[in-house]
Length: 463
Image (cartoon, rainbow, N blue to C red; front, side, top):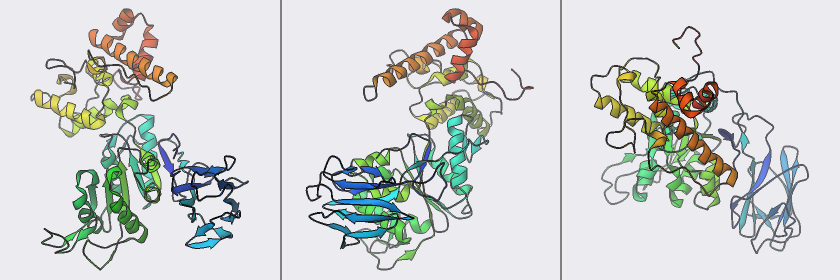
C-alpha cells in the first residue's frame, strides 16, 4: 500500500488536496491485501490473468472476473461471466452502479472502491509554532500548515513519526486550536496496556463485567465526550479490539464491556503511531477498513535530524520555559548539539537540556551550560555528537546503492565539520584554514547540517 512521499496525505474530500480526487480499487481482505489499481477512464479489470489491471491469486477468482468503470459520480461494476460470481452487500450481481466506498466479494477476496491517497499540498505556514511545537524549518512549517487546516474541522487525523517527534504535542495543539478546546482532551497509550485491560480502558465496563470489576468505569471514549480522544501507539492493538474500534467509529456509539446499553458519542478522534500503519495493513496486522477510517488526514512528523535548524529555536524555548533567559543559542555549543544524530528526537534533546541545567545549578544562560550527550563518555561534552569515536557511519543495505552511499557521505560530512568546529571553538576562518575549504562554502555546508545558525532575519540583530 504505497503512500505518496509527502508530509501529509488525505483519503477523502473532508480536507481539500492539491489536485482532483481520484479513486482506486483496493484489496481490503484476501491474499493480495493492500494491492490497488487506479480507476481511470478506461476502467479496471480484475482477475487472475496477468494482463488484468488488478491481478489476484485467489483460486476462486476467474481469469477475467469483473470490471469497474467510472460512471458520473458513481461506478459501474460488471461481472464478466465469472465462475463463482460477484457479491455486493451479500447479493450476487451481474451489473450495478455503486458509490464510492462500496465493497465487493470475489472468491475469498474483498475489494473496495475508495479515494486514492493524495498529497496535501499547502504553502508552508508563516507561523514558527503550533501549540507547544516550535521550529523554523520548512519541513516543520509544512506540518504546521496541515495542522492549522485540520484544526478548523473535526476531521480524523493520523499522526505518524518516530518516537519523540512530538505526536502527542501535535494532538494537544490540534485540540486547543479547534472548536472543541473547552471540552476534555483524553490520551490513551494503547501500546502500554495489556490486551485484557485495553477494551475496558477504551470502552469502559460495568460492575461485575469481569473478575475484579468491582465498580462501573467510564471508558476513554465516554470521558472524551464533547472533546478530543488521542489513541496512541495503535499498531499493536489486537484484532478483536480493532474490530470494536471500527464499529464505535462508524456508528459513533459505544457499549461498555458487560453492558447491553449503548451511548451516543460526540468525539473528535486523533490516532498516532510510531510505525507505518499502511505497512502494517499490507503485512496483514492491521485492518484496512480501520486504517482508512483513521487516516482521513495522515501527517508524518519529521525527525529532528531532518530539521537540524530547529535545534536552536527548540533549545531557546526549553530554556525560556525553565527560566534561563531568552537569548538565541549560538556558538560552538550549538554546533556540537547540531552534530549529534538525535535518535530520540526532541524528547532526547529536552532530556539533554534538563541534564545540563541540573549539572549547572548556577547557570543563567545557554552559554553557561555544558551539554552531555549520549555516547560522549563520562567526561565528554556536547562536542562528540555525530563525531563520537566508535559510532559507526549509517551503512544501510535496505535502500538503493546511490541512497545508501549518499547517507554515508552526509553523515561523514556532518561529523567532519562538527569535529572541526569543536576544535577551533566555532571560528569559521580557522575551520576553513584547517579543512582546506573556502570559507563561504564551509559556511554553506555548516548551515546545511544545522551546525551554525541561519542568517538572522532581523537586519538590526546582533551578528
